[in-house]
Image 1 (spheres, rainbow, N blue to C red):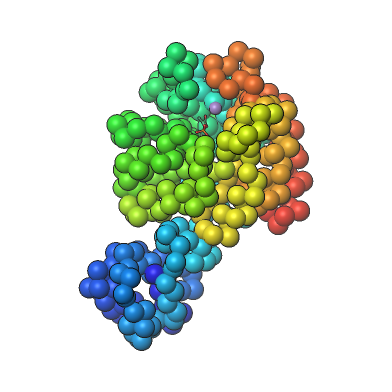
Image 2: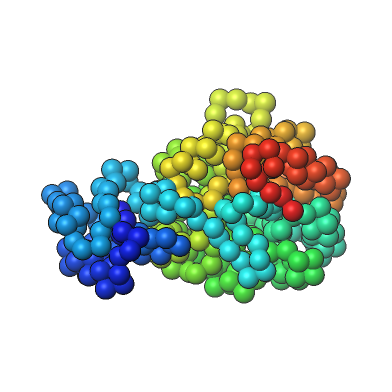
Length: 339
Ligand code: PEP
Ligand code: MN
């Protein structure tokens, strides 16, 4: 249930409404916007009568939400969530944010070289896998903590935030000092224990859509994170598995406007995993921004032919620079900015 307080509601009235909701057995999440306060009440009993809340002083509107997710729903924060970082970068605001880097961190030279190129081209976040979810146990599994250290150094040197994938609960404390954003990969979108633990952290999480997940399942997974009190969630479309074989996955561009309508959370797109082929990455990246994505997650490698993972879908630095130039033309056409 969403309780939108009147614009002129006093702090005392808001407190009384919250107390009443808690007494009725709800878990209450408060969101204070520039103009009004919205209360998200989770745990409604089916027999609950919304009029009991509607009649309280200071209450504007009460909506019983029929969708299974509540905190993630657009109505909880109609103005949209903007995830802000100390260095001034915001995700979900007017500006498009591009995250770029290799699939896996492989060496100091590699990550520093890629960080320098993507930073020069205008990326704001350095991506790179330290723990890799590989289909085969014999494939490169990632450099672990050494990779995180290198990413942090490269990020700091070239003015980039750092995002890396967390695969299990035990990696959370290890990663905390190194990353600015936790990435939850497609394979872990429904690892509910991991989501619950990340919900307790106060660090942004980028949650990727599962390989065969519906949009509603993606939003429900985000609800796990928000229900723990972590409101800084960024969603990401990365392609879903279909019967098509010309691409690695089928990139569901329509998920972008659908999620933007259903949820207040920022929505990014990953055209690298979405297509699996280097020559398809830029067209789908352009399409995603045109469709309203708040940014992209793109794989870039200084020497893709030598990459330990996902070389075929990694852009050469020059290709990435060209894509950034194209996005700078597209962004204003859809009312956005790209610095
Ligand atoms: C990745 O970003 O490198 C990755 C493994 O992505 P996904 O979880 O979307 O497959
Ligand atoms: Mn990859």
